[in-house]
Image (cartoon, rainbow, N blue to C red):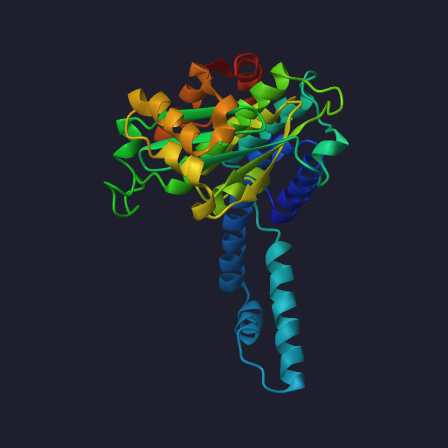
Length: 337
């Protein structure tokens, strides 16, 4: 096995995988380690060049100066481009970390698996009218969502293991224990995607064989993670593995949209139900206020999905999406009245 690399090699590989991800969007959620490693290695390259070459230190100092004349601006711009190029093209050898090797092996396994598609239907790749729209929201105690188009609603109460690590109990993240609302909102969007997939698999449409669900939330960070993948949160990246597993070979595409909290009234209300035993009765009261909800039935995510989401949030456990995909898609959950 290869043990070292230069940054240019890593950038080339990441670029090729990004190209593949255009038609295999589940791949985006497996690539965070590439970008984290590249960022770390660029910092190491910078330090190495500063220590080793006086000419580089001089150019770096010039690149940070304030330019007043046109000639000075040209000199500063040239210094900036020169130092950036040298940092990226440095021949300094970096060791392949355990995390990076695990990611490379996982992606190789996924791309070599004969049952995993690396193509997408064109309707999942271009802007289009959604086949159905769903809303979700999360509080620090529970999460919920609904869709009038797809006739479902769902609710889960976060266990004490999660609640006691939120801002209600933990005031900062100095010890790395904090579970952010961004992660809980992201988990809610994932569950809503599962409910949407369940609906379209059980209610196929001849005129829309490749449906797309528009998942609406009031948290811009979580919405971005759904489409672009998470980079800076360990829990977010762990949840991204779950999303990747759900997207592999899934005939239902997804997209995200933002709604302000004031317009997310129903999902917000569901997510603030105090106790799971009150969920059904509270939803009936919502139907009185919003009659369009009358046709919605409760979706219960599968135990396997909930277990995987809880492991990602509580233990920051990274699932193997190749192994988990078939299992999750074979049992998404169930609908009750």
